[in-house]
Every structure is written in structure tokens, then in C-alpha cells.
Image (cartoon, rainbow, N blue to C red; front, side, top):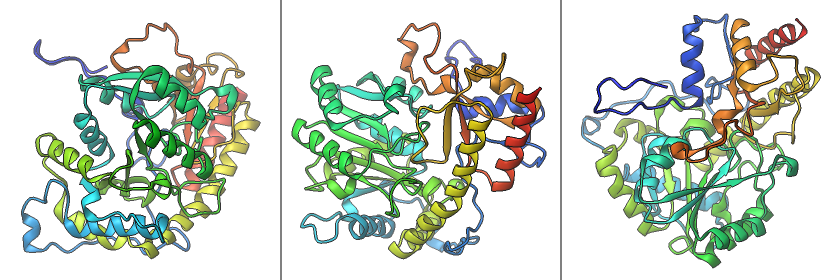
Length: 414
């Protein structure tokens, strides 16, 4: 945990990936050091993939780019994103997204922060386990009350629309936040179930806030991508809020370009929140992103991702099982394997113990306890229910993944 520099500032904890990279740095890790293997990174490899579109390595700067971008984003990019969602998910539907249904933000966290800042005094449901950065996000804004919802490992983290209905009605939820596919478990709410989820949101007037940043990383379906946008009836009435961006699905994390797709009143609210939170994103990068989000380019990228990353997923999942890591379910999405190390010898049988020993082999992982999202530390559990879990990323290049797993095999064999 970071120390407060003066009495006027509170200690601000580091989220999971930031923590493990900081600890690895103390052990000598540098991102440029090829002797290290970072399986903790929440970032995909960023080079060209076979069959994928040409990577954009240079962008022109127009004189107008020296000015601020609109807080809601460059209009051309908003139009292009609306067109992509309509072409992919809403062909033939009477209700279509427009630029006014899209807001651009400076990265995924900025988009999430805008949404959180725009929420009213409601109960907000969130799932366990889920994305580590949700913890501080759900604590910093005091308008809403964060309510945890457990996804049961014994059910392979499945969560049905009936489960959702029961939670919304029983806990009086005004909104539900979830990553789909799920970070870290890799569980996916697929088409049929996702349609039922959107129906529950519509019928109960409960906002469904879906982090779809991994929606190109789908291992169980033939479609190039997955989105709740396909099941919205009226784009300006259904309470469905979608977040995505270039970070994961286009593999341009350094660009910090993300978007929110939602009914127009929600877009007005999150844009207003952006005016005092972050002031808007990068104008030249937003203009350069217009061609990247064309239907052709986006589908080529999704297809290339699914071919290259599926091979890495299959290898990592198989090898980890051979090494004694236990899985509640085969990862159906994302670029993570989420498994329990409880059956390994001590001290490798806890997520934190495994992380510490793996650093000695120059391998970075993320202990599972970071995904036990606990805003404000209101739950008094002494030991996380995910303390024996580890998240392994197959985001890096295949050579890095294979090298890391061989080092872990030698570590376990010792």
C-alpha cells in the first residue's frame, strides 16, 4: 500500500497488476529485460498477427489536433463506433445507435470512472471475483452503495438471468456492473443467456453496465465478437451501458482510447462527468482510430486474435493442469487462466506464496486475492476466498508464455 505523503492525503492502495509489477521491480524486473516473463500483465502482445490488419505505427498531426478534443469525443470516431455496433449487432433492427449514443474516454478506467461518477444514490451490484480496479472505483464515489454478488466456483462461475433477477429484486439493485468475458475467470455470458440478462435489465429497469473489453477473446463461439448490443430493443430506452476500447480488442493499450455506448441521456451524463474528471482524451489518437473501428478492420483483428490467442490458451491451460494447478472451468474468454494452486507444495499453495516464489524464477503472476473486490474493506473476512488462486496471463508472445511455464515447472519440481 502506498504511504500518504502528508497527513492531508490518504494511503492509496495499488491494484493487483500495479502491485505485482512494483514488487517485481524490487526484485530487479524491468519491462525491457527479456530475462523476465510477465504473466501478470493485463495487456495483449501488440505486434502484427497473421491474417490481421496492418498495425498502425505512425499518425499524422493536423493543426486542429493541437486543440482540446470535445469531452464526449471526436464526432467522426463516435459515428464510426456507432456504425460498427449497428453493422455487427443490429442489422435490420429499427432502433440504431448514432454518434449521440457514444462517448469517448481516455482509457478503460477513465470510462468506468465517468460511469461511476454519473450514477445516482442506488445499490450497485458487482461480482466476485472480478477486475481488481473495480475495488477503488466502487469506494471512491459515495453516491451509490456497492453490493457484492458471488459467482460460485462450484458452478464454474455461471450466473443465469434468473440468478440476476433474484439479486436485483432481493437487494433492490439499481445497476449491476460486470465484465463479460469475465476478468479473471474467463467465464462468458453467451448469446442466449446474455439476451435474457438484457431482458431482466429492461423489465426491472436496472442498469446493466458491461465491461466488454475482452469481447474479441471468445473461445467457445464462432462469432468474431460478443456484445449485449445485439439484444437491446431500443437504444435510447433500454438501460444497457457498454464499455470497450482499443486497449484489449484492438491491442493498442498505449493509445488510451475507450468508449461508452448507451442511451443518449446516459451519454449526456457521462460526458458531463468527463468535463470535471478528465477533460477528454487525445484528439489525434481519436482521429487515427476512425479507420481501426471500421467493420472490416475490426473483424480481421478479432479473427487474428482468436487464432493466435487460442493456441496460447490451449497450451497454457494444458501445461498448468499438468503442473498441478486446478481449474473450476476451462477459460471460455479473455487471455487469462484462473486456477487454484492449493494442491501444490508449500509455500506454492497460496496465491501470494506462489507469486513470491515465482519472482525468484523471474516470472510474474497475480495472486487471486486481489480479485476479491472489497470496496472500503467493509467485509471483515480475514482470509480471501480466492487466496489459493492465481491469474496467469497468456497475453504475452507465445515464446514468453512457453518460457515462463518451463520455469514454473522447474520451480514446482524443486
